[in-house]
Image (cartoon, rainbow, N blue to C red):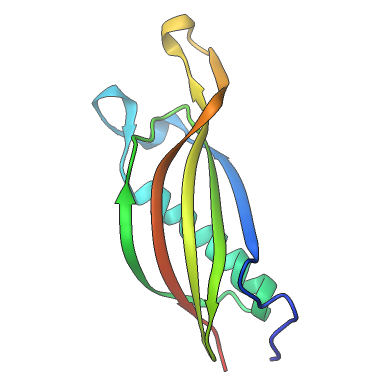
Length: 131
């Protein structure tokens, strides 16, 4: 399997996802931090497919930071940016940003996109792909 020409630092993959109420674990409809980490795995998989035509394997996380709450009813934008390319390793920076939020105080299904997105979670991770 050959590495594609897309395997270069600066490559970015972005997904958007609505956070369902079934994922609320805590008071105030808070969602656990593992939810964002799972989404990081999804964008990392797409990035590895783009760069190496392989799903890759997640090897480690470093510097995971939960900066703001994620709530059920949020719309998250999750991005992965390739920052370093090794022979088999891919170092990736992740960001989960709240770009929309439910507004249940205004009505059962009220929600809006935010004019000022909120960075909720950041991390650095390493994936490995076949040689």
